[in-house]
Image (cartoon, rainbow, N blue to C red; front, side):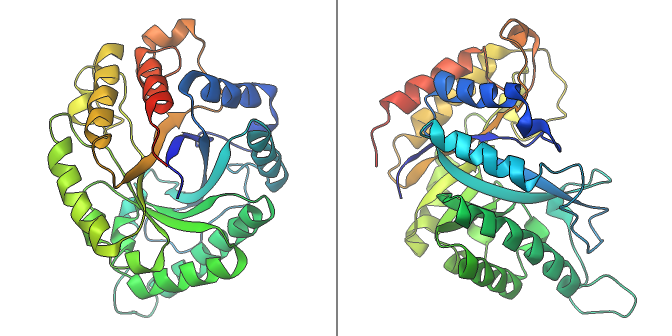
Length: 312
């Protein structure tokens, strides 16, 4: 697998957003400002709660198939490789890691079989789009911790995806879960969310390396990043953390992460989190406290790392 110098794009998009010229300009600026060679286009279906079984991927909360295909084509026209990442959120705000059902079916209660049927239909829909648009990879799930123990269902889902899509298939587990996923044997590429606190990267990379060696498959961080707030480098996964705008701390987080990961041959890249479809202005960057790096020192850190990194 070619080393991934990537960024996540599109997560905040709704129907029609990819049709806007500002979205294309945002993608172009992502490439220009970060030296990314890969874009992970992340889209999000919805289910009502963590305990309901219908996955809705046809509403206005999703970009249309036509505009998604057009954005993939545009990304490729820029010379970017494309990874498609269809995932799911809960309408009530519950994090997808808590999607869960009884292990033993109970009459009148929601069941794993119903949820996996709906979720598999969703994944197959986008796997077919990835196939016709020649995407380099599909990521079939993200941070779905409670579902991961259902290894047989995940293996079946991945098998069905591979019947309609012939590129690489990955699953994006959550931070600290790399050594707890029982179906790594079914995917082509291991990936996880690298939201590790400052000062802990060496320890966590040691742990992850053991898993990667066990399965002897490529690994990359499908997500990694830090908000530009004071204190966020110690809890980079907490988007609700309250702190003053601190663009220097965000940049320091990226330096430490790249320095640590750059010494590990098993790390085959990043899909950094995240680049907004509709950007804040360059002038607004000094007051923006989110994960975005546009107009912030972190963008220069990323650009320098991506242009310097020569691994293949």
